[in-house]
Length: 350
Picture 1 (cartoon, rainbow, N blue to C red):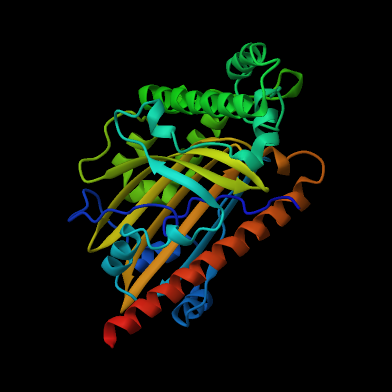
Picture 2 (picture 1 turned 180 degrees about the vertical axis):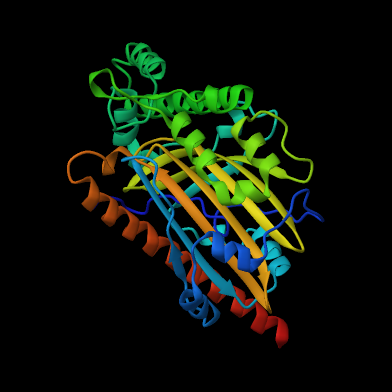
């Protein structure tokens, strides 16, 4: 299997949203948004009948998988934002082991709940012995520091090895967080691969933010701040940092995530980047939004995930399989959202 529950940071599924009174920029109408994403009359009819439709998102490299999806929910936008703000959707994420927000003064203790457990001892040992390659996403200095640590653990028992792996991984996560907060995309260290090659999530994320022309047209200040972070974000935006530990391809995976949300009565936009991922894929970038549509809300989002797994020989087939797996997961999550929101509306009417 190419992917197993690839972690996708979707606006309506993985974050706290924040309701703000106004936009600083123009907001597209639902009709403009549908036109921007190439959604035609036939698909609009499907949307209005409760169907989930896909739209094309251009891929920028052999390593990238990109897909867009939209649906109309029979619920007003503020109710959707309030529902998600309460964390009702993330509570049932079966692949989420643990997560926590990262404050401005985050330190090593901010990651204390990130850990390999006793059943993941083999993963912890493999981490301590990490080499350049795609088993773990680590920079050369990070791998060198693991080798230095390993030299001190030659006769250590399993309990000591587990404790050392957890502490070292927390240190790496903290340093990557601090480097990103200080220097933005330029602070993201590349992943060391075999034969002296590297994977460069910073370049991937910069390209993704640049290529997203539709949202950039309506929120140019937000796009420029996003590209040039830590340049200050627009005054009406709210940001959040958090770490996650997810099961990806049946392995625990550390993820560092940066999210920004702007929302008001006329619409909402959410952008998210995973600027560090422990393994399986390199980075992920999401642009998502919600617009009032008749008596409900038009929800749309696109995700771009970069992974070495779909490059090289058979790339076309690998891309097709990868997109289909991501699509199924996105549909499943949107269906759950729809079901939960309808249940909430029914309960409120009783």
